[in-house]
Length: 87
Image 1: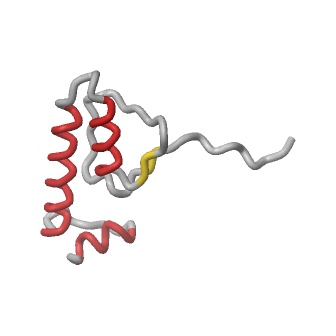
Image 2: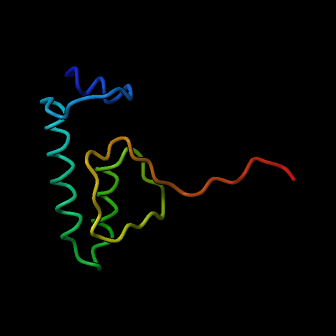
């Protein structure tokens, strides 16, 4: 893993010229291109692409194209969790 990707993952400042980051970005953009070009009736395809793109994608998640992000692997979208607070 390149130094800049390590810095990004730690939350430090980084320059996005790292080979690993460039490959991750390319991968995400290719998936997004397929996702954003999908037809409304292709919900199964959209579901598969979101699960390939995102770090975590819960059941029943629907995102209407166009969808934009840089890398996706650190994005987690899921069902709302029940509150653990008491009244």
